[in-house]
Length: 134
Image (cartoon, rainbow, N blue to C red; front, side, top):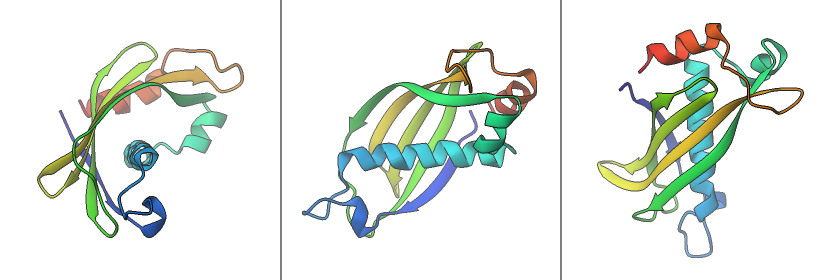
């Protein structure tokens, strides 16, 4: 599997009163990494919405918090496409501080029609680039 790594610095706004990353912000870091992964493959989400008229939406997240990240930490969000189906993309994502795994997640993303928000097949032109990385 090819890994896509997106670096993130923890800012004060990402933390709670104790200087620890607020739990929901790990999901934001993962979302940014998936967006940058798509961008690295040549896809901008606003353009995909127009042509071919699709969106990628999160259907399910399974997340395990292992260790806290803190203010000013430098993190790496590692994204791997672990499986794909007709309209489904399954990702394994990890947030690392150096070699330490802080958060481990499985994220299911579904391709939907941008107008009706109903699942549709990932267009061949998109699928070809996405599946080349696995």
